[in-house]
Image 1 (spheres, rainbow, N blue to C red):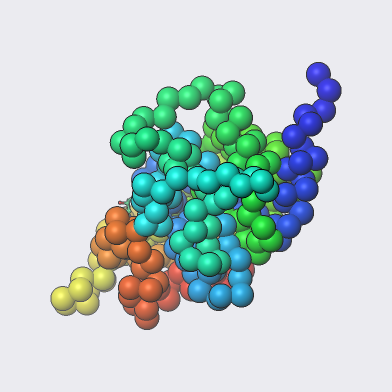
Image 2 (cartoon, rainbow, N blue to C red):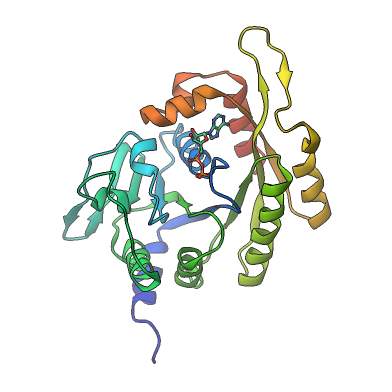
Length: 267
Ligand code: ADP
């Protein structure tokens, strides 16, 4: 088999993208997609910064709902597939836009997933982007390998790893770190999500995962990767995602807002 003819086309598209960031987690349900969404919203607060979200969680795409774009579909133009836009400087591409009904299950085998990821990278007309934030499925699977393979030549800026403070999640993040190192993806750092809960009425902070609080910081020290920060549990984060609204627009100045901004400022 000769070289994949798609690679030069992908490289050409990606030449216009300054930073490609993969968001990874070892486990599902730790808030990876929520973090991806808020990261993209936060980056796009600056109107001069062009941001794209590419959702390669093929079997469980959450981006259409989390960005308030459920029911939208992808349009074709003579320059390729157009992303669906949240605002002038934030576009989204997801397999979710291709489903007839958001409740439809996507049951695809590896090669078909591989094919759609290739198409997303080759055919989507993002224009010039400052950041392409890629939401991935939990763990390391076909989707991750495809993305890494197709972006190898054009280069991935790095991966952000999302975990909860629980040891069970941290353990899987160690595997993700191993994966990144094996395939040569730089690690931007680890974000600890759902770290502590401040009671809205009495303001007392409860460490929901008390026995392992601080575990993410220690794990980062142990394995030599940057710790980017902690995002508290805030039910309004879930609510804003369910509404497809930006938490950052809805609750500026709240603890989680500051935490998101700190994480971004840390890099
Ligand atoms: P993943 O992508 O890792 O599977 P999601 O981003 O879908 O996880 O998040 C799982 C659930 O947790 C969602 O209902 C989301 O709204 C909620 N959630 C995520 N982060 C937080 C947080 N910091 N505080 C409160 N709820 C959160």
